[in-house]
Length: 299
Image (cartoon, rainbow, N blue to C red; front, top):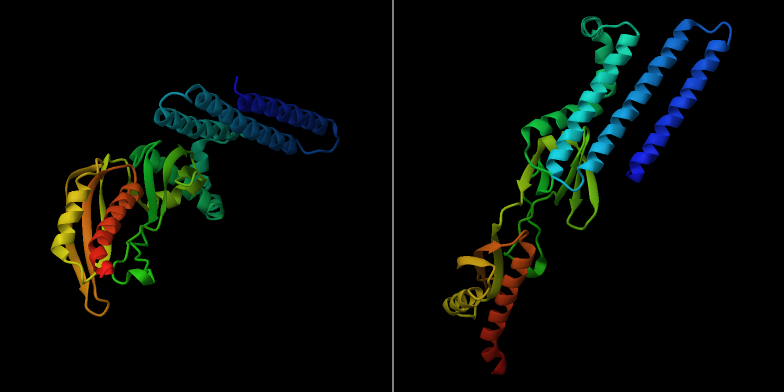
């Protein structure tokens, strides 16, 4: 049995024993209202119920750890949701309170509790929406960017006009989805837990495609013949086995003040991310520029 499951079983037994002893001791004290015993039993039911639901979820997760992560996560998610609802129903029934009475008579209390736990409830219901809408699956590589922000263009002084456009967000592999949080392991191997309410309102970039379009902008001095530069770059890029088809190489901007030409390269590359193919393409551009500048340096 999993060590985590064993520890949780011992914890549940310990808590149940402690609360049972407390409940028994309270009954022996004279003058204690009977309602206090009922409250202790309710607390005991809630704590035991939540721990048991979590225990069952951990067992399911441990058994399905080497199988389909998406299915196991869904089963765990539903188990917790249904389990918590059953525990709440049992707790209410022990007080002889029906669900209809709670719905009809608990309006004010519902508003107070709802306002007090607005963030938690938002994450909870967002988790349910994500479970059924399935914008992504466990194991997908995604980028999360909140919808209020768009692309940003960082400017590097040596590059002048050839700005890069970046997506401000978190990129990584989806590892787990719970009732309140979604866990993503970032590209730097650091796990991050994001509230489900944030995930639900975020822009989600799915990075699962086998091929992706990689765009590179590169500046060269205006003294270099652009036609010759384009021909040499196209010839060298054809040798890269991860590029599919013929890449597009063209002039995107010119600057008379800085005496430079900005070239754009669009290539369909086989890669999980654009960093590595972009690096290889830039190497080709640097090599080509150096080869065309050599005659000038010799003189």
